[in-house]
Length: 465
Image 1 (cartoon, rainbow, N blue to C red):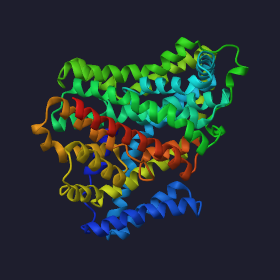
Image 2 (image 1 turned 60 degrees about the horizontal axis):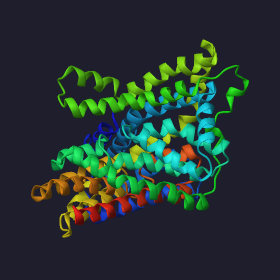
Image 3 (image 1 turned 45 degrees about the horizontal axis):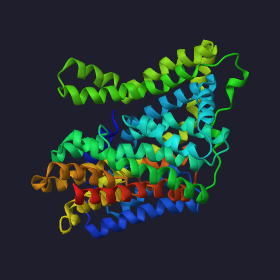
Image 4 (image 1 turned 135 degrees about the horizontal axis):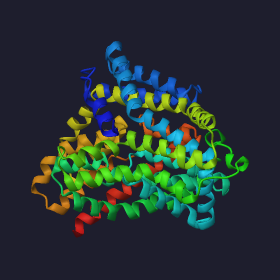
């Protein structure tokens, strides 16, 4: 199940759980978020429990029946884990195979030999942008995290100096560039030209990712100076191995899911016929689940067997890879539950109702609506879908170029300030071993920079195109 289908399920599966007025809903949202932040920061409660209690508090403040709030939360948790949980698990297995076989060491040693010092953040943003082009954000994270953490550890780099550029590359691709689900939905809603949107998206993405990645990472590293978390970095297992896989085989295994998903995206664009055999085949092999599962199976031979692993050693590696992610799965799932509770309480509709009375330029209106829905629901895709539906009538009188810019404005707004109601927030927090405050000062600020810089560039382009 893709991120798009999961978030649309969360948005549409349950009818509004309350008919509260706008003022009461607004207060309920602020109260729910305040409860979560207070429980985590002051009472040191585990994020999974805090998100669960915060969701129930949100429903209570909104005047919703407790049973309906519970259904919303559990439905959101289930759909999030169904869509993201398996991908995280497969990514963890692939990461453990890379680490234990020495493949990750091979990648890290090569990167450290070829790019060092000031060029390292630029190398990371380039790698993340290329890998992130066809990938869902969560898939990109689970593929890149082992490399990011090991480069930071082995090269003695600040984790934020290496991690922020990688996250920026993934996030910009997710929000602005087709074939990611958000931009594709917006393109369809406003009837934009896909090729032109892709071209303009790349034009906006390049300066945006530079500012939010390598440039901002200098400041993020000063604000949050933390080492790579040891619990997420397997020991250098290759030291006790007689051999380890080659750089080419390791890189090919890492890129296999990327190639499969990119192939699906290209076939979708070129064939554009859901009944065509080629498209049906690539819809299967290019789905995130099958692509990562294929990479794991291939990795058992190209990585595990190449390092001389026995069947027992392979089984042990897989088993040990899953333990560290149990907490992450629960937290990410609970984040999805909180988001679903927000959406089902009618917050998204409240934002749409209020924004109808705003009288400002179409591109800025699209950006602001997406920002508001993103802040309220925590979902970039839901923000994109809702904002695109609202501003679609405005595209009727626009030129082809401005229609594409409208899509990009929506995508830029949908990335604004990720916080405690976004599953991605918890994913980054747990993988990088940060607390809530540190995650806000790095990840949340980076997302805001992406949104504001991209939005500004889009408005500038609208003046000259």
